[in-house]
Image: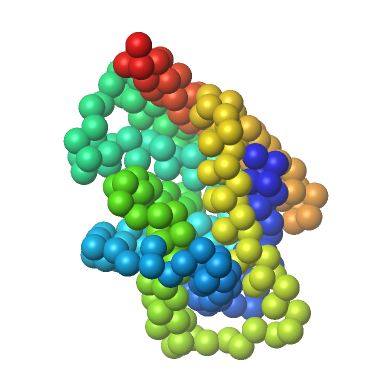
Length: 278
C-alpha cells in the first residue's frame, strides 16, 4: 500500500507538471505509449497467447469508459486542488455498487444503500451546491469517477475469463489511438524536460494498480481500504507544500464520510462471505 500511495501521488504530481505544456489528451496518449511498452515486455517474458480473447467488444467498452475516467481525473488535476480530485475519486465505489446491481445483477444490501447515501452526502459537502459556484472541473472529475466505476464493473466480468496482463494490454492498446486522435488537432511537442514526467505518469499508473492488487492479495480489504484513504490527507499536504493550495477541511470531511460508507459496505461483505464459507 505504500507503493500504491506513492504511485498515485507521483502520477498526480506528474499530471500537474505536464498540464502546463501538454493537453489532457496528450498526457493520456503518452501514458498509453509508456504502459504499452512495459506490458509488451512482460508479455514477451510470459507468453503472448494470453492476449487471445473472445470478449474484445467488452474490452473496447471497458476502455472507452476508462479513457473517460482518466480524462476527467487528469483534467481535474490541472485545474482544481489535488485534494478535491482525490476526494471526489472516492465516489467510484458508490457508482460501482449501483452499476454492479444493474449490469451484473448483484443484490443491493442495506450496507450498500448506506454506502450510497453517505457517498452522495460526501459529494454534497465537497461541492457545496448553492453556497459556491461549482467548478466545471469538479463535475468532470465526478463524471470521471462514473467512468472508472463502469470500467471496474466490466473488469470484474473480464477477470473471470482473461488474465490481468491481457486486460492491461487491451487497456493501453485501445486507449493509445483514442488519445492520439483527440490530441492531434491541438498538438504540442513535449520538450526534453517533460520526458521524465511522462515516464513518471506512465510507470506510476501501472505500479499503483499492481501494488493495490498485491495488497489485496496479501491482506483483507478491511485492512487495505483504510490505508488507501491516506491518499487524501497526504495529497492535501503535497498540494499545500508544493502548490500552495489551501487545505479545505470540508473536502477532507466529505472524503471521510464517503470513506465511512465504503468501510461499512466492506465490513458487511466480509461478514456475509464468512457466513457463506461456513
